[in-house]
Length: 237
Length: 305
Image 1 (tube, each protein chain N blue to C red):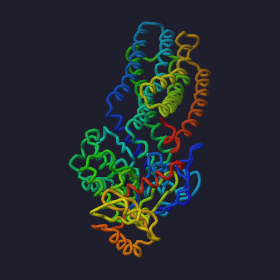
Image 2 (image 1 turned 45 degrees about the vertical axis):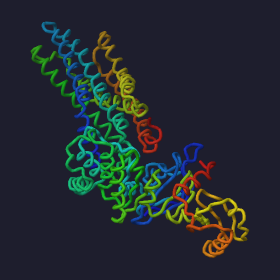
Image 3 (image 1 turned 30 degrees about the vertical axis):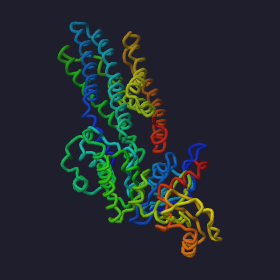
Image 4 (image 1 turned 180 degrees about the vertical axis):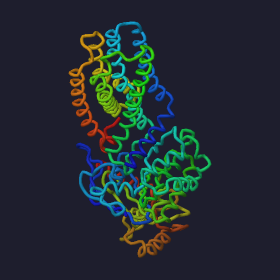
């Protein structure tokens, strides 16, 4: 645990020094939060049912966020090591393969979840002020599950995809582009909600959660296989 | 301190290191010479538990590389061929990170000690990106030592450095042996190997030779005698007619003669040359340079790699 803490602290310190990565990670939550707030702002004076529909659409921004925030961080934490030639000295330390993997993943997952929840809190506060209260039927169990269960699962998904892709390329631009594919699974419910085929409901949340658990499990298995010293030294580009 | 037995590593069909057996004692600097692709880096990586051997066994600092990899990693310091650092972080932060990963009890003090020792203390708060290559190499040495390892693996430590920086690094490596640390030094620089290493291993996938530099030179020189002449002539080489002379050839300022036993045969050889009218200026063992020895060993093993 001590070594893991040391690794995460160093990663953070390094990421904080890279303004592009830092601002990139902060810009998205502000943008998405702003868009969600704008959507709710448009609902002023509408009946509560219409406001709830706008909330449903706005929710999707908070499901895209946890996937998009960690992409930049995860890509840099791998590609940065390659660019700077620090992988071998790092692998020569007593860090275990698992600690390296978890350390790198946590650096991206934790801010993604934290920022998503923080922006969601701000959004609710803003909505409360704009609409003079939260419309009924919004903060239901499916909603809360979406924010507090799907978001972390999505963040893990985004990080794992980004790490897998980054391990295979030394070009950060290619890694960012391919990692952008991680957003695709979040677009399916977005389309469903935004065309108002259905509102946020328990079945959809459970379905997406189940798919994400399976995908996270699969990518975790692949990532753990990839995060072996031999593999990193001999196969990573 | 380092003991390898029949250590072998294959990558698919290609054998990178073939049945390498060597050992290095406490406080010894052992040179590992060989052309590019000879298996030096793979050897270091196996001994530092970064790569698993395909077969064979080895122990480093008393720990088996197969069974006690974390202990081995904790006991060795490694300087890789291109020493990478977190360029945006300061020198001090870079070293403290590694000191903490190695579990150094007082990391700040250890970092301070080595930054001062390597003349980097004044620049401790600067980002590594601002350092020259020579200073980075010194910082890499500090990193390799910050956890006080008993064994050091140094891969091309002076490669690409200016002569002054290279001299400083060599001087520092020399000090390590006096601290009872064992150093495995991979280098292409033969003069450096000769200056620093107690013994030298020549590797080209398999071990070609392992001995003290002077012994390697003596062994490869065989029983050749160099005779300096004021009047070098090819007839002296052809007219010797002595039973113990194996070969004799005219070189630019004398003769190079291979005899059966130099201790016994040189007086008779000198007498015979004087009889033939040679004006002898000097007689010496025809010692090869380490470069000659290296090239002969490596060149004579072309099919091995």
